[in-house]
Amino acid sequence: MMMPFKRQALVEFDSVESAERCVSCGTREAVCIAEQQAFFNFSTSQRITRPTNSDDPTSGNKVLLLSIQNPLYPITTDVLYTVCNPVGNVLRIVIFKRNGIQAMVEFESVEDAQKAKLALNGADIYAGCCTLKIEYARPNRLNVVRNDNSSWDYTKPFLLHRERGKGRQRQAILGEHPSNGYGPHCPLLPLPANSRYRRSSEEVQDMVSYPLLLPKTSSSSFLGLAASSSVAMVSGLHPAKMNCSCIFNLFCLYGNVEKVKFMKSVPGTALVEMGDEYAVDRAVTHLNSIKVFGKKLNVCVSKQQAVIPSQVFELPDGSSSYLDFSLTRNNRFSSAQNNRNIIQPPATVLHFYNAPPTLSQHQLLKLCTEHNVPAFTKFKVFDAKPSSKTLSGLLEFDSKTEAVEALTVLNHHQIRIPIAQIGSTEKPQGAFIKY
Image (cartoon, rainbow, N blue to C red; front, side, top):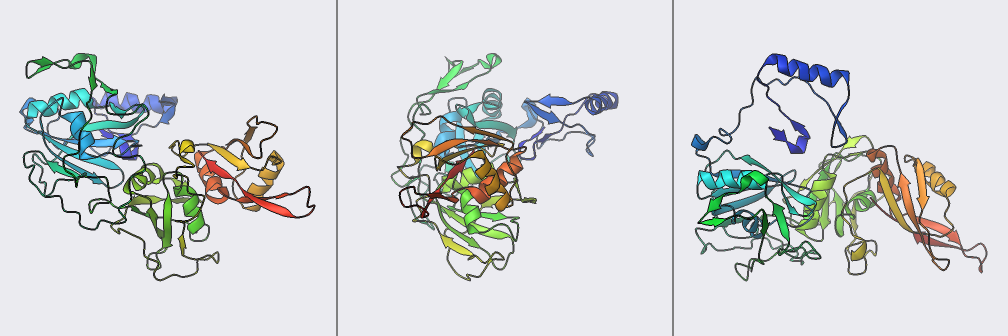
């Protein structure tokens, strides 16, 4: 049984002896899975018990639990209906966001649910991302109170879509459906070779291609809804080393950051208002559970619909507990910066750009020392044109945590460079950093 958000799994063997051999082998020599070392130990559970009897046709469960891993693009009821309905008749969908994006999909019959699980488990909704991990859900029926982007009852198309708490109503950056090769006309879901079956006297092809799905109603848009929020809550922040600017440096890689506010009543916790709810989804996906300055961050969707600048106080480093970043030029998801926005999870290698052309490896190492962040171990500069006014390159660190800490402090740091014709006068130039 997979536990994707814990990066763990339970494996039940036919005997204790088999489990002992597995643990013993894993202890003697390193076992790597997808280039990551795996560790084996005995579980406190004596057997794997599932919410239902898994693939047993007599289980009577027609609701599937979908966990969407690496959701770089918006996941809505439209998207999931387009994915699931060609495989089996979908009755209801409910999407919820806690430590990631999950959804429950209710099919018309147990057979449809079983076929969908067989065909879609492990598939990517879009190439290289939005990977589906499917289990059977506990409930055998879903309760839907309204039809919108987060829930839909296809047996009751007349349900009203009430937009309570519209928030800022800012248009999503990526739109409702991705483009540039990820569009809904692309063949997205290669089915397993053993999953060919007939439904409604038509054979399902090995590759499913989905048509463009028109909006259900004029009000079913991708604006801020009560079910979601454009505000993220981050806790577990280092009390002395984290401030509003550090949070901006970290979160701006996943969407425009509007406001950051530390909560006086909950030390080490801050609210981050972003440009839209999808930016929050990306931040939750990539930043939740990472370590920064020895503290494990917990990033989740906030119940707040906006950040209000109340109870402003001074942080331990002397900076303000509230900052408005809505007018800063360092937000990267504007039309001028969109071409640079390749969403990446935290990694050991940082890409820096917009640095002054005279910047050297020694100066960068000195910068790391002055700001008390880990130093990089490898340095590479990209070849630039002689007339180029900026420098870009790569910095490799010993670990992902060290790279994150360096990015948190040094991202957008203004490096002062001398202007030859003026002599000692210096001009600041901010360097951008991303994974």
